[in-house]
Picture 1 (tube, rainbow, N blue to C red):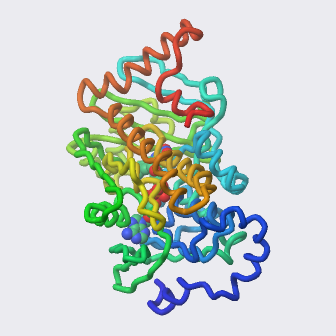
Picture 2 (spheres, rainbow, N blue to C red):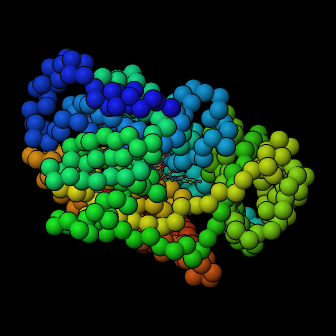
Picture 3 (cartoon, rainbow, N blue to C red):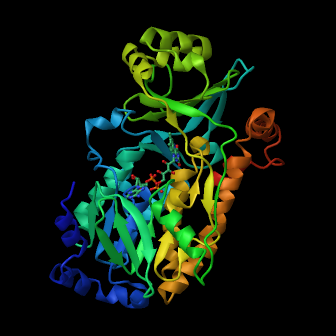
Length: 450
Ligand SMILES: Cc1cc2nc3c(=O)[nH]c(=O)nc-3n(C[C@H](O)[C@H](O)[C@H](O)COP(=O)(O)OP(=O)(O)OC[C@H]3O[C@@H](n4cnc5c(N)ncnc54)[C@H](O)[C@@H]3O)c2cc1C
């Protein structure tokens, strides 16, 4: 934890430390001169906050401070990354990969990713698993990395290349944001210290403090109201994670998933080195899972629900699963279409679009936000840039949440929405590939769809 004084001092980077980078970037910065605030604060050191900081530094912005309420994650080379307690796996699709390539951080990230070329899904009532080839369907493979390892890579990129422009702080929680008449945002931290900034980025995830303050304050402003919708979770599932070892007779480049009629879903994304981390999603009242308190009981549970996964289990992973706490999934929520405040504040990532992780939209949409904010910042003024960004991404935030939620309806509707289109699409596409288009999920993952 930083001492109060340390924090206030480090929030203001001394002028002398900025002189040389500014000189170096003079030529490139002329184009954006009107858009560059003297200081930027980003709340949230998740993938979205870190990638935004890198993007802004590459545009020649400096004096960027980014902070998070949680402690610092381990470095990307740490052994801890195999531990599902530390972080779940996320799949980077073409949008996520392209956004990271644009930031020139892809090489660093890719070396920690498993290359996932397809899926194998066991659907209730069907004896044989259904196979999907990502290369055939999407034209590329999904790259899988643990969420905190991705954050670790982005952090190392900042330390190596942008340390003179970006300062990162952990264990600092933003509690309140107020906007003064001069347009500056004033942030008050949990320990009552405060900081003022002409430009604020809210990248603080599903329970964003920036968002809740912006939504409230916009109701009393003369500017545009920031709308926020949080849906009640009418199809609640909770989850536990489990470490798996991929047996020699199974491919190590597939996403393995299965659903059983007791409404439990397992999805195992591989890591490098024949390991995988599975998320087991179940109803909060599923006593069979909640009461499995020993490794043996967990093994028996898999034998009855997911026998196809038995060869992936180890005694340690069953014991660990039995001890694990149950986690809640985030509920569907969105901001939009307005996701900024005049020329002072903008929000992105899970703070504006939170979805359940079944469809892999979260991280990729977050990174795509940064790709587009970068382009919108080419506008002559910061205000115009943020208006453009709202126009471009505000509707998208609403759409991505609405689409995901429509696919997550309870009961038979949910099953029909989720599985039937997949089965029918697959059937018709296999029979008459030229006539039937790929399904919605495939379409949204196709290169070039934005
Ligand atoms: C089990 C699970 C599996 C998932 N799998 C996938 C997947 O396969 N594919 C996919 O695309 N997405 C997946 N997601 C979603 C994905 O993790 C998020 O979409 C992504 O992390 C969003 O990035 P972000 O930076 O916007 O938010 P976050 O990753 O949530 O980061 C926000 C950061 O802000 C910090 N913060 C919050 N409030 C404050 C505050 N008041 N002050 C200071 N700091 C604060 C938090 O500590 C956090 O570090 C999954 C999520 C879960 C829970």
